[in-house]
Length: 186
Image (cartoon, rainbow, N blue to C red; front, top):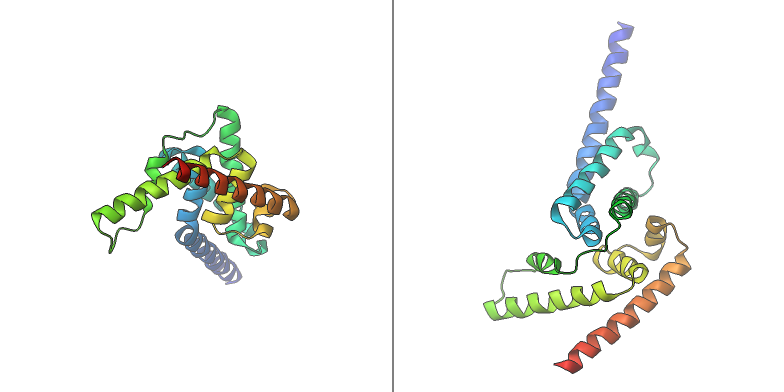
């Protein structure tokens, strides 16, 4: 009887862990994909990175209860995975794949002309982001696109919060100059 109760308890615990991991996948998979894609610039590599992140979560499922902020924890895992892959590949992100990101624009309620103009503007802004130095680009991406706070970005990148704020300040100033320069050329 005691063995059956212990087995039932283990089954219940395992089921709860599985449900928690499933909820994490549902809630964060898209955000993790965006983070991975922002560095890798390849849809299939980004999907692989996200899958690897969730496999690591499965391997360390016993730590789930100890994690204070699952979003930051998962982004940190993906960030480390993609940086490891980049280091191994020793390549820079491709800038021609920016067009791929224009597919995520809102498409309801816009005329064809407005959609084309929005897609062009979106691609232009992303191309400007790609021109930023790597450290500033990383911080801006996590702040603007993933909406992480400076504390969360510091945790993801393993740097101080003041470093995040100064990189973000530089990134925003550079973006303003790039966008103004482009606007003046038109």
